[in-house]
Amino acid sequence: MKRLLFPFIILLSAVLSFGYGQYSKHNPYALKDCDIVFQSGNRGQANAIKAATDSEWTHVGVVFKRDNQWWVLEAVQPVKYTKLEDFIKRDPKSFHARRLKDSSSITPECLALAHTWGAQQLNKNYDLKFLWDDEKLYCSELVWKIYKHAADIELCKPRPMESYNLSDPTVAALVERRFGGIENLPKDSPTVAPSDLADSPLLIEVPRK
Image (tube, rainbow, N blue to C red):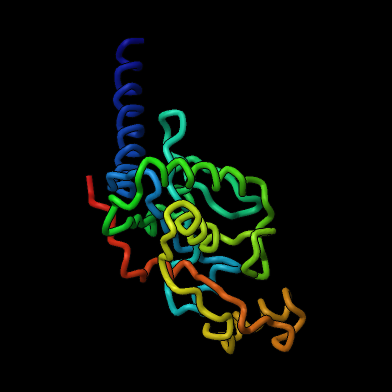
């Protein structure tokens, strides 16, 4: 029995070590509260976002530590907290983290405001039309507004919706489904995409562990 058990233990240890190694490989960042985490998706809306923005980034959230665990506050359906490891597992290879160059701007008071305002957005519906009101929220809008409300920091300048590539067939099809045609699109409506946040001159990549 012992002869059979020993190889099994070795195999189990190897599997667990591989899993941990994969997680560590794709989570190499020394994270802090309010760091911004990015992902690249490959299905549905993600492909339209890539085409509209000419960028790989399709989703974004904000990291908070709660009950000694890392969570990502994100606008999906609905706005919610997601465990960091579950966020990463969606697409480990594309996981990326950025933070303010001047992290001293996130004072304890600002962090408390970020927690409070973020909590007030929980369970709001995802905004399929990417509008700039607070009734519903999309991912990059949530991140932008957390920084604005908590620290009066504008990570980037919101752009009119018409400034993105709306002529791409994938984007045009999404506009047709959600607005009933390009003529119904609020072209001047302020918009922030994940790529706009990633390109912010105020941000740098989070240092590695």
